[in-house]
Image (cartoon, rainbow, N blue to C red; front, side, top):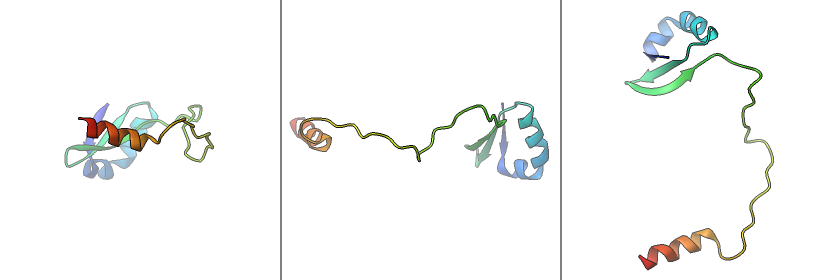
Length: 75
């Protein structure tokens, strides 16, 4: 894994894409803070999607927000 700046990445884009294809992880930084990660794309890995439907959790009793407010007032 290597860390490079955005400027370095844009100037040598093809080199870093080749390195990522070979399996190397590249962290791209902006002002020395990690901003993005470049790695080899694997089609066999499933990625979660926000578009998938889900069943909401139903809880009996009062809403969680009411419980939190009561707990804060007790302190």
